[in-house]
Amino acid sequence: ASPWWFTEIAADWGSIDFTINLTFWVTGFVFVACNLFLAYCIWKFRQKEGHKAVYEPENHKLEIGLSAITTVGVIAMLAPGLFVWASFVNVPDDAVQIEVLGSQWQWQYRYPGADGQLGTADVLLVTEDNPFGVNPEDPRGQDDVVVNDPELHLPLGQPVQTL
Image 1: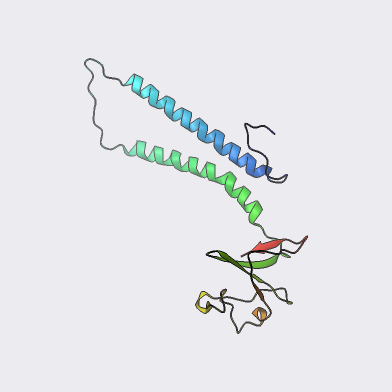
Image 2: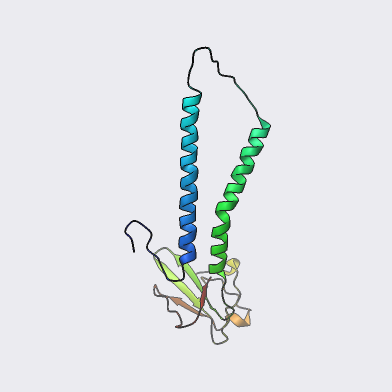
């Protein structure tokens, strides 16, 4: 590990490191290129005897070209990150769902009950006694366990999806 570069977070997160490095190098190249172009323009179009600046209010071809280049650049910068993100947000089918509710200075968790499924919830049903808005008519929600504790307990060796 080098003190001059990112420390690898985890063994399987190399794709995130690659995306960060790609973003760093591409934006660095664009930054240097833009500044070199600016320096060139300052030198090339400096004030000279007999030269007069021309005001050009619109140039549709230039505007379309710059917009297209910017669009392609933004898409090119987003694409690798979206692929990396997609690989991390895929939740396995057997993942345990746990709903988390954060409020000022406290956390609450809703775990599935014996049936292994969370019941439906609706924000219109949220009350002081029902902080998650669990639908009382949903049979899957009858056995849900609500914990008002800052400590989250996760099952070992099982994938978890937090909602």
